[in-house]
Image (cartoon, rainbow, N blue to C red; front, side, top):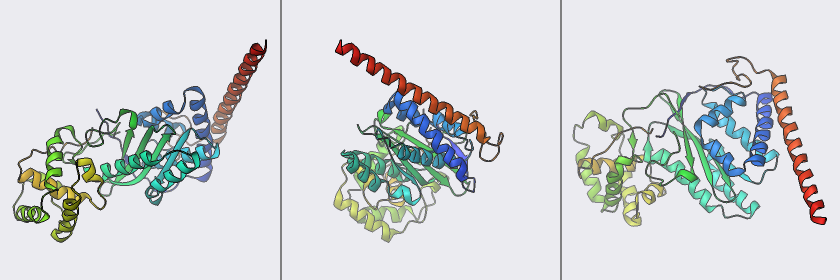
Amino acid sequence: MPRICELPLHYGETPRWLFSLMVRLGAKIIELFLMEKGPSFLLEKISDPFWFQALGCVLGFDWHSSGLTTTVCAALKQAIKEINEKEIIIAGGKGKTALNTPKELDEIGNQLGIDASPLIFASKTTAKIDSVALQDGYSLYHHTIFATKEGEWVVIQQGMNPHTSLARRYHWHSKELKSYVCEPHKAVVSLKSHKKVLNLVAYENENIRKTITEISQREPEKNIKDLSYLLTLKLPKEHSVIMEDFSLEILHTKLKKLYEEKPKDFLSLIRSEGIGKKTIRALTLISHLVYDENISFRDVRIFSYAHGGKDGHPYPIIKKDYELTINLLEKAIKESKIGREEKISALKRLSAI
């Protein structure tokens, strides 16, 4: 079952001295994982919400802060850049950086000589699903994609609920993805879920996904006529999730676009450029009340510290202890490399004999 993690918004920035330590320690952890298990195993661990949360604790960030997601991803991105690691691709970040992810992936693809278009598709689609097909009250503001050159990928993105100042993190992993539009998440981590959510990627909403796609291909005037009538009705309380500030003029333009494009399935509909939350809500309302399709409003379904926390809980970070951990990992990496070189030399000598 998918799980949900909601984290409170903490104001302020990560101190530079702590972020630099996070980058250095993150780099050693990445190096060790790649040496011992390889890039696919590293992606598998990153996709696990509890492992990711624990990693944030090891790096010394606040375990219950929304900033853990953005800061850990930023530290890992910088770490991969500094150690010039080509086995792991990482792009994206917070705010405007997230919007630049497709361009960043394209540039990385050109540098590595690989086709980045499947990763760009995954990046754009996961963001669209969690903002349009899943309308849970959280607006996305962070998006990071981790990938291998072979095409395996993990997406970690986060949204903020402006009314509660809580964040929600979404984990995706290509290895476990069977469908973008039906229970697609590896995990979404939390103590709290909401009673009324427009969750069009729920398993039980398969029929309404099909109906939404079908009526999107009707003449827009017919859909506007149905919607105009529905807006005059006094609807049950649960429809407050759908009923919000419809502009029939704008909707007509959007519906005309869909009528002309005729998306072949729900995924194509969701990915249509310019089609957002309100268009999907309007089509959902018509599907539910005019075509009598049932709709489920079901929402999608602590850690230890190694170095303390940024805000001093459960105790302040002790810099010398943090440095000691980094030095120990550096020593382990060097010794591992020396051992490997000795084995290679021995094999060469044996081959010569």
